[in-house]
Length: 358
Image (cartoon, rainbow, N blue to C red):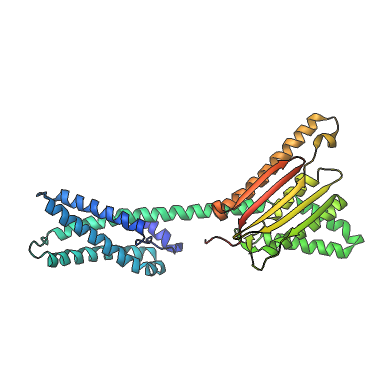
């Protein structure tokens, strides 16, 4: 137990105790107080309803006074090492128990509670606090482990989104240097911006216009590779707000549309990118053509089916990766829907304009 507390003390600066004065928590504390009163009454040899009422009232006062004091000290606990905070919580529990004991003796002076019960009551309070703090420490360790796993997952997904087009970009740059060095320099700048973004901290939020700039840079590079086969139409609604979006969230959707939609089609196709704003959300819609593998490979149905399955699997994996990022960052506040409508693949993403509180 002490080892785990010390581990938390190194890096975990979150509050040791939750807000104990919320209606739900107060109801829980009243129930705990009544259960402690019942437990104390059961320990008494002379079991009468008078003892039960007195003990329950005592337990309720201890729980409520302890909650008020610890609530007032929550910010102090957040600034101090976990181990010291735990000692302070035990000290508050002991002092509160003694205070309530002598206070009730003054209120009920006709039938004061014997002083020999005070050590027993303090022992019960220490036992309850020990169980609760152990649960709290283990819970915080679990939360920290889950956060670490989520950050690792975001980082892995973010790095998986852009694997194949680096080599294509290098080939473009190599071919442009002799004939068009200015365009080659532009490609280098676009590529460096994309990879600079990929090296930023996982889960970062950026301005929407910056994310759109990365998308345009990506499409510009792919346009040099695919030439007239790639037609890109942008429809961007205007807003006076400054929306933010997870870094490299839109670019993978465009990469998906180009790699699985336009590229396999010999004559290419058109990608429509539409951005709309609503009260609290924004919606991005991307449409791209769907390759007809039978028309590409002729009568070789076996090759067509294999390539179609491979493309579908890769496409679904890309969509699943982005959905995972949205779930980690937004929970149920964001949606990503993908559907096949005739010869067009429709991707629709809806998310809040501002990041959720972290």
